Each structure stands twice: as structure tokens, then as C-alpha cells.
Image (cartoon, rainbow, N blue to C red; front, side, top):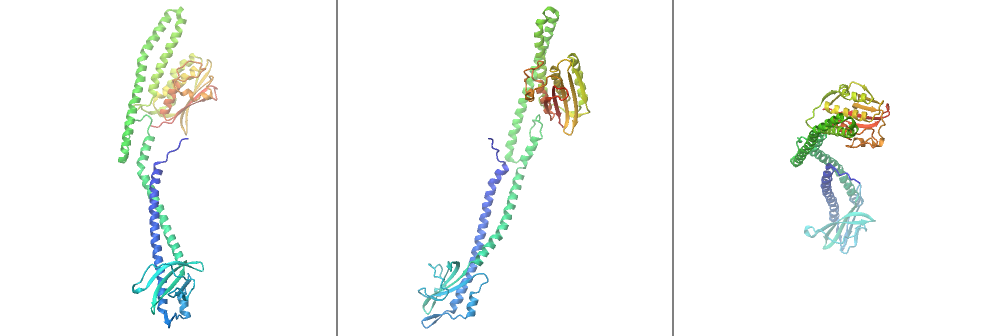
Amino acid sequence: MIVKPASLRLQLLRRLLPAMLVLLLCGAGTAYWVAWHSATKAYDRALFDTTLAIADQLKMSGDKPLLPLTPQARAVLLRDNYDQVYYAVRGPDGELVDGEAGLQLPVSVHHRLPGGERHYYFDGYVNDKPIRIAALETEVSERVFTILSGETLVKRNALVREILLGMLLPELLLTIASISVVWFGISSGLMPLSKLRTELAERSHADLSPIQVDVPDELQPVIVEINELLNRLDHSLSSQRNFVSDAAHQLRNPIAALQAQVEAVASESPHDKQKFGGLLAATQRLSHLIDQMLALARAEPSPAQTYSKISLTELVGVVAETWLPKAIQQQIDLGFELSPTLVSGNSLLLQELLGNLLDNAIRHTPPDGSITVSCGQNEMGAWLTVEDSGEGIPEIEWESVFERFYQLPRGLREGNGLGLAIVRSIARQHGGEVLAGQSPKLGGAMFKVTLNYSH
């Protein structure tokens, strides 16, 4: 199973976003803690003010402590629109002097006030309700009393929720804005890669010239290596083309001389004509192979190839003049169904393409058979087809016949297996393709070439 690698954009996001989110969460947590701490301190201070107010009213009546609060004063002291407020006054031994019995003394003391007074805050419960309590220790007539003031947590929890909601929305908007900025920054940073991809995608497979794209310094070594690779590939392909072309040229003259000598000997010795017939046929096949190798070398993509506007109807006429005598010699009806069609391409290569298709059709069409050449254009581009009335090609072989040196096992005429490979190479140079199939009109093989090349 092939695992698709993650894109560079996603890899950058995976590294940047977690760090950004951690920073945002830390900032939100810090701000929330500061706000909560400030609110708690303010409410605790209000509770402490209540204990001070009660402490001012605490007096001694003989040996008995007294808190002379009127009902109205008690109502004002305990009044709150949101929370329930409690107070209690306890003596030196923790006994209840006045107030709510549920307010218990704390376990430890945390703060002391100047002048011997002590105050502190702690969390407790009254009637199973969580409350916040402020405690004040004060001396009255040399006796220590503890004044407790507590309230439920409704206001505090409401403030916490308000702070949380008030911070979540800006933090969420900040997170979205940060992600957008990061995404835009990454996209902008990767723009040179997109330009490089476009530059490579728009190139013809024959264009091996150096890449000229402005990229950051970090990508310059990559561009240098790609250009060096293209240069090495260009030299390699040029050497290959030159070798095939030179070898074919060097072989052409000796083979032609050999063929001429065999024909001369065969004509001078009529009684040995049958003996020399096989040698002559082999020499002719070898000569044809050399010609096909030259054609294959020319069909390989090269920067030197030029393209111009070409009329397919005129091109078919030029090629037909060469192959029509051979078709007549084989007693084959060669017909044409042509529509005015213009393409952009190399005239010599397209003539080679059609010549190979006609050669293939003539070799595989029996006497008294038919071949039809047609061309036209539609919204997809130009097309050229060659159909024959031969035995056709099995569907399983429709793709294999375009491989180099591949031949059908039951071929009616001998070939070298290069003709259709040349056709495919030329068609692809012109931005098209060639497909094999069965002719719906003649019943034999059909080859359809699409030509979409625009230069």
C-alpha cells in the first residue's frame, strides 16, 4: 500500500499551529487567573469590611459580650441581591456569641493586622452550601473575639463565567486570525514552489533548457541540481539520438550496395533466382529496418524541431503519392475521406506518421481489400484515422502493438515492429495520442491519431 506523503503546507502547519495554540492558551489562562484573583480580592475586601463594621458594634456588658444591632441594622448587614450573607461572633473558646451557628472557626490563621488584630480568609460550608468567609480577631476588654462574615459564591461564579465568556470570544477570534495569517504566510512562502511547478508543467518533454525561476536562497541549490540534471539528460539523449542516426546512416550505404549486388546476381542468373530470392528478401527487410531506425531517431523529441501550421488534407495528398502505387500493386483500394483540417506541427514528422500507418495497413490488408484514410477536427482537436479490411487486431493486443519491436504472432506480412512505435512517439510530440481499435466500416484494424499540439 502506497502512503501519500503529507504536503509541505500541512507539515508547516503541524509544526507552527500547536506552538501558537499553546501560547494562546497560556495567555488566556494567565489573563483569566489575573481577573479571577482581582475579583476574589475585591469581594474578600467587601466581606472584611462587614467584619470591621460588626467589630465596631461589639461591646462588653459586665463580663458578658454584647452586640447591640437593631433589626434594621441586621437587615441592612445581611442584605444582598445575589448571595446569602451570614455572620457570627465567637468568644475566646470558640463559643457562639451571636449570629449563624454554622459559621465555624478556621483551622489556621494566615494574616495579621497591625495593632495586634488578625484577619484571614478561608472557604467553608453553611447548610452544605459552599461559602467564602472573612475572619477578624479583635480584643475587647482584654478578651479575644473572632468575628466571621461569609457569603455564598453566586456573584463570584457569575463573575468567573463572565470573565471566561468575555475572554473566549476574543481568544477564538485571535486564534482564527492567527491561523489565517499563518496560512497566508505559508502560502506566500510556498509561492516560488508553485511557480516552479508551473514552469515544469508547461514545458514540452523535449524542452531540457535550464529553469529560470526566482526562488529564495534556500531553494537555489535545488534549482541548480535540477538544471544540472536537465543538462546531463540533454547530453545523454543527444548522444543516444546521434548514435542511432549515425549507425543507421553508416549501415544504409553497405546495405543498399548489398541489395543492388544481390539483385544484379539474381537477374544475371535466372535459374538461381529462387535461390537468391530469400537473400534478396532478407536484404530488403534489413534495408527497411535501417530506414525505420532513422525515422525513429527523427521522431525522438529534440529542441531543434520546428512547428508550423499544416493542412492535414494537403499532407495526406503528399503521402498518398508515395503509397498509392504500392497499394495498386497489391490490388488494394486506397480511399480518402478528408475534411479541411489545420494543425500545428512538424510536416516531416507527420508525413512519417501517416506513412507508417499506411505501410502497416498495406502489409496487413489482403488483395482486393480496402484502406480508408480520413481526417477532420472537433472541439477536442484534430484527428486522423487509417482503417483497413484486414483481419484486424485482437482487443487484448490494442496496447501492445505500440511497443518497440512487438509483432503480432499471426501477422500477414513481415515487419520489424518499429512502425507503430514511431507513430506513437510522433503523436505524443504533437500533444496527442494514437489508439488502436476495430474499423466499424471495413471490419479490420483502425488507428486513430489525435493531434492537439499548439506551439
